[in-house]
Image (cartoon, helix red, strand yellow):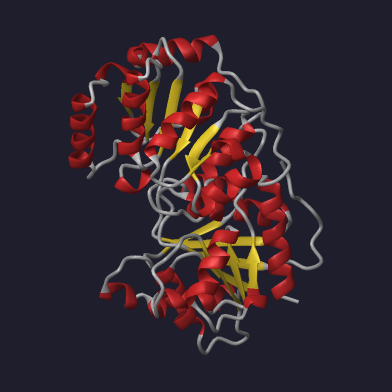
Length: 374
């Protein structure tokens, strides 16, 4: 999917982010960089690096390694180098996506002439206060959902709302094609790896190994469905991570106590999420705190797979618009079990996505850069 066009003039856009290892904000950096290059602009990213750098550079962006996101006094010592880099690059726009890099960028721009335009993106529901308020100093403040816009307005009463732009994250429908089904070879390999997931409807909860993601509620859901005579399987996708061993043991203990060892599996992050979602009877989104967006909601629905989730934050916002049947009051486990049983019996039809496409996000980002640069 291309956003190539002949630009009115060539822009240099520098994006600042702590690192490029994984995550939604990091993925957005790559996607915007790709759009800039395809449109004939210069895209530069400054970060501590990570596994996504190779793809970033392969798609035409430049990367400058500089650790500007580590919460340490040593980071401040890199301010001079950052200022020298920006003076050499002479960017039209500096786009920051995290709080410490935003402070670093803000200070580095002081005294530069001509001074680049300063744009921020608020990717999360950060704790309000002076430290987070740096994200409100952008000439344009990009937010990824109406949820984030409302959050900022409620906590920063003097905020000039005219500077806020809602630019939701998007997915490439070609990467998550409507009605996709994995081939037989993939299915055979998957169920060979996870034999206990065969033989019943698969529920998938994607999410890193943190209590925020609602893994306990997912395990309880499968146990309650079992008590009602409804046979299901559960995959906790991406929960196994370095440093999360104690949390994984806690989940294993709960699985054993609830007697569902034969129907639950846990994995590290995987690259075949499209096929896993496509095989799932339900994709779960059970975060116990509101999230800024809900990318997995859009990915699953793009594949024509039902989503069941707690109706708060960005997830609730997306479900209300795209799949109301999948909404459950936050933390209401009884209603969660009832709704899961209903959707497993008869799930309402899912229409092909007309919004939240990657190309829409990319076009909006380029339009915003052109707007601020005049």
